[in-house]
Length: 465
Image (cartoon, rainbow, N blue to C red; front, side, top):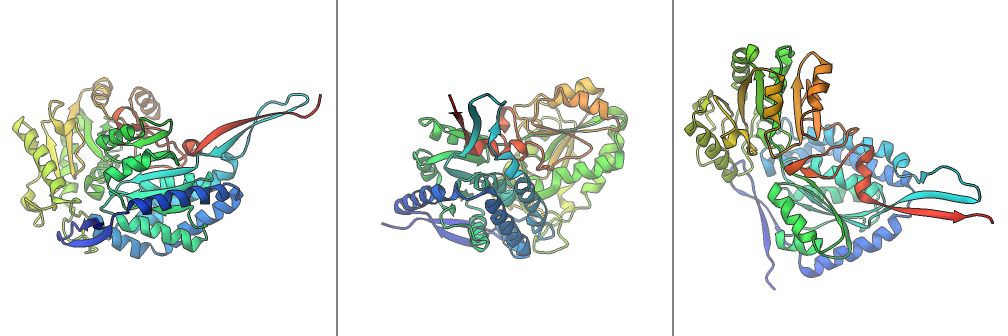
């Protein structure tokens, strides 16, 4: 049988960076069988030992962050100035938080005493967890499921996006160095059809997926014939509202970063901004000026602050969305010629700010996934709330104001998974990471972050008559 090959093309220069053989049917069978066998023993390991192994895994990743960051830059194009910090900061922070709370959150759940009976609820692992992780934040998106699943006593099979296969391989190396028993963590390089087959296999107890809305539907279809749960973290069109009393400089600085970091390739990137009309002209001027300070170019250059999109096709879709908005009356405020590296027909795309936008434009309603934002003036809170809710997504929303009571009142009316005041584009591991509508379902992180990876078993024991 001919071995099929998965390729990774680097967005830096369009050259072949990696080739990996896709797993054969026999390899998939061995992986699932090994996961089942390993999990039966792993579930008996005390939580404190599981915690220690996960902490050692994170220590290895942090110690090797420069190498892993370099690999990440070459795989997805994020500037090397930022890539290592995905591991040193967010990844490590999430591992440590979930490890800190694991023993308490995975303990048996006590109920009120009853004479002559012992009663409690045990949280058992679901078995083999399949984690389907994306390329844009491959370490951050995967750790939300990988570590809580393993802490809960499951085994994990990780399938990374074809753009970032090295992440799966480095996880395996890190867990091996940490002393994780063989078979508890494994990875597979497989295509979409093979993913559907694995989801349909009776040995898989839960599927955690991060990716597009279309991908989420495909996962649901594959799981439809089985009574297993799926966690879906999908897309976003995240809004920000700048009130008249906003901390102006902080709002500009953070909202530029929230839109442009990772070239806008984030499910929780800021993609649309509504500004009170009293601040609008001043805000737009400051926002454009700060955006112009980005340096687009070779992401291996430490001075680069904006890298290429992951592939040329992705950049072309963003260019098409911009052009469609302009055709409907929008105005672009940045000349791409200001960014010498920006070239049509390449993944190098200049950042862009658009005004005179409205919700008839896909730019304000559909996920862009690029370094582009539309800015609209609004008259008051009511108009801002209406526009923020005019979306089939609902992942995060940020409110920029000095009035926390107002932020709470507005946030209570926004249909979203996370409400921020005076910050954006950040996951606090102590808070539940959730989405509504087409942004997905289920939960990761926080005290609730173990629930998807456990099932409940009640013990009702008569101790005397």
